[in-house]
Each structure stands twice: as C-alpha cells, then as structure tokens.
Image (tube, rainbow, N blue to C red; front, top):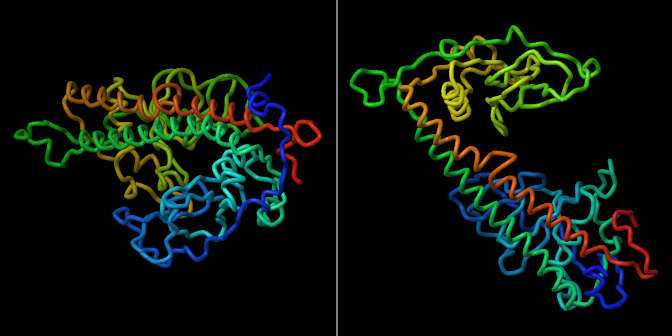
Amino acid sequence: MSYLEKLLKGVEIEWKDLGEHTIYEQPTKYRVKSTNYNDEFETPVLTAGKSFILGYTDELNGIYYASKSPVIIFDDFTTANKWVDFDFKVKSSAMKMITSKDESKLLLRFVYHWLNTLPSGLVAGDHKRQWISNYAKKKIPIPPLEIQEEIVRILDTFTELTAELTAELTARKQQYEYYREELLSFEEGDGSASSPQRVEWRTLGEVAENLDSMRKPITSGLRESGDIPYYGASGIVDYVKDYIFDGDFLLVSEDGANLIARNTPIAFSVSGKCWVNNHAHVLKFKSYSDRKFVEYFLNSIDLTQYISGAAQPKLNQKNLNSIKIPTPLPEIKEEIVAILDKFDTLANSISEGLPKEIELRNKQYEYYRDLLLTFPSTNHEKHKRHEIQ
C-alpha cells in the first residue's frame, strides 16, 4: 500500500473544475507605469518568462500585497507557475493570478503543488490564452482538507530546503564575484617599480598561443557520432568520434549574442580530447595558473570595446589578441587562482557543490510530488493528469 493510499484510507476523491474553486485574475490594475527601475527600490516588478523579476520600482500605488495574501502567478502561454508571497507590481500582460475561493475547501498551496505536475505547456504549439480554454475546465482532485494539509506539509519540506540552498548559492556567487573583482582589479600603473603588486600588462596575444588555424567546423549532418565533445561558442554542441585537440586549452567565444548578454561565461577551460568549431577561439598557455587566471579575468571585464557588429556580435582574433592582461608575479597569480577555484567549484560546478545539491533536492521534490498527487479518479482508475479535458 502506497503512502497516498494510507492517507486516503478508502476516501473517494472528488474531481472538480479548477475554475469552480479558484479565482482567476489578469493583474492589470497592479501594472507598473514607470520604467525607472532601480535595485535600490523596494517593490519588484514581475514579468512573464524565466527572468520573472524585471526590476524594482518606487511606485506606491497599485501594489498587490501578496505578503498578506499569497497568489499563484503563471505565464498563460507556457503555464509555468510561481508561488508569490511578497508584494509586487507587474509588467507583462501574459501573466495571470490564481487565488482560492475558499481555503476551507481547497488550499491554494495544494493547488500550486498540483499545478507543478502539469506539463509546461498544456497544448504543444498552441499560443492561445490558456485560462479560458484549459485552466478553468481542468479537473483537479480535491481530497479532504486534512489530507491536503499533510501533502502540502511534506512537499513544502522539500521546497523550503531547496529555497535555503538556492539562497546559499546566491550568497556564494555574490561572494565569488566580490572576491573575483577584488583580486583581479589592477590599475594600468601597477607595473611600475614602486608598485607593491609588481604587475606587468601584456596583450593576450603575448601570453597565449592561438590555435584557431587548427579548428575545423563540421555540419551536423556530416558529424560521426562518438564520445568526444564538439565545442562551439558557449560550450559543448555535440559529441563526435574524432578529435583535433588533446590537452588543456582555454576556449573563448568568437561570436554570438552571449558576447553582449554574458548569460554564460565567454571563456571556459577544456581538457583532454576535443573538437572545436570556428565559433570559439582556442588558446594554449604554459601553465594551469596562466590559463585559469586569464579565464577568470576575461569573464570579469567588459569586452564591449573589442566586439564588432551589432546584429551579429563578433570578437575577432585581432581584437582578442589585443586585450590587455595583467600578469602579476607567478606566486601571486597562483594564490589568486587557488582562491577563485574554490569559489568557482562551490558556486558553479555542475557535478559538485551547491548546484548539484539543489538538482538532487528538486528531483526528490518531483518524485514525492508525483507520488502524492497521483489520485484515483471517481471510477478508481489512475487519472491522466496530462490529458487535456
């Protein structure tokens, strides 16, 4: 007998239209008027999509006080939903709000967890507004209140832990960025004999060997599948059978919007056998500390002056080689790299540190969520939650 069956104790579950027990609202009356956003202001402005918090406003009128009455906010094109318990204003018209009509019948927090079991888009390729056509008629299970409370308690345990780890990760990243900025802040005059840091400034072309001439792009249709990574501007694009590089290298994005957006690092180290196409520069260094120091430095500075092209940003080889790099004494460089390596492993590593822990906790949440929210329908058959009603 499953834990859910033990909770139900034979109780038959009602299935009701979601629109029958929840209130839907397009939050236009909470819409922000000014676009004068500033991180020093208090009220977040929410928008549809992954960014969610667009910025912060100082507008005092039209605030939704979710700190007093939490809501579920979803993007009506993708059905991605978020639990919001902080005061806010909105920007996007694609956002919708859900509240419960009667918490003694249906807990809003229970609705939130159940909505997370739905696919990210209720109708693939359908860009119609989702509430009227799908949400209001979607059948939701309504177990007795005490069972809702127990399910919410269990699932909240996982989400609270994930929230704590995410907050810790954010703090670590901020700490990492602070120390990176402090450790890599060198003035042009630091190369003088009187400078205690004894930093010499050299161009990247002087401190690294450029191997761009060895790159060979292969169209997807001609690639022979294998286990060797095939790299592009922002990382691994594919896996192929052969390789053209074998060793430790620094790859730097040559083109693409990320050169401006910087959503992912534009410089990243690779080791072992690999293939690189012509969208990433290939640099070789004399030592590990030389390579990692340049990687950290390039990812910390503004490269706008070296990038050409507005529609298609490009960092060509000539401009790349002209970037000025501070070169402190070897022992200082090694110490800086060692410190930043520790922060990088903790904050950014996929296979270890906090991101991996958060990933595992999310998987735990998804497992128990699906386990606890797969209710039998009124005919005692397993309900197909993903089927459009």
